[in-house]
Amino acid sequence: AAFTTSRQTYLNSIINMKLAISALLIGSAAAFTTSPSTRATSSLQVSEIELGSTEPLGVFDPLGWMDTEPEAFERRRAVERKHGRIAMMAMLGTFVHNNGWTFDGYLSPSTGLKFSDIDSGINGLFQVPAAGLAQIILFCGFVELTWWPASDLSGDYGVRLGTLNDWEEQPSKYYRQKNAELNNGRAAMM
Image (tube, helix red, strand yellow):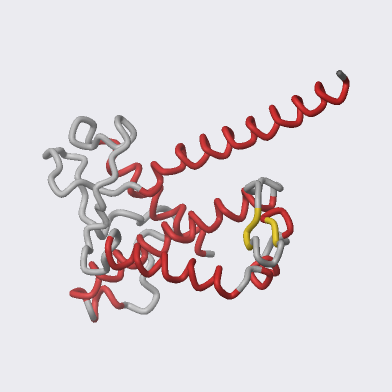
């Protein structure tokens, strides 16, 4: 009976861990949402240049590209937004793995390598089999070409999370959330 109780406690802790990870992933998805193609007119709307310009730096352009190449700003901002989103997802994965939260089962059944056998940090990357790394790269390429195409500079990939990013009904959220996305992406890229 004691063995059954400890096993049940262990299974409950695994279920709670998976629920916590799922809640974190779903909750953090709001950081990766983007503006709709049409927004309600409001005095709070700002230009793309003003987004992300926060104190004390304001608009940070140390190389003067906004003056010399203003036509390239939209593309550079879209690239910054996309790289920031990727960096935020990578940081979330780092936090999850460094806290010891792993998937059950095998990463590579043919070699007997479990998810829990992978080290945290950059050393873990070198423990993933080459076929696994190839799958990751192919998946990222697929997402880049189909879901987040480089030709879409708006950054709006159609993800809506109810009232978390309902900018049409609450336009004041747009500026705050866009600044948060850009600044958090910059921090994650650092």
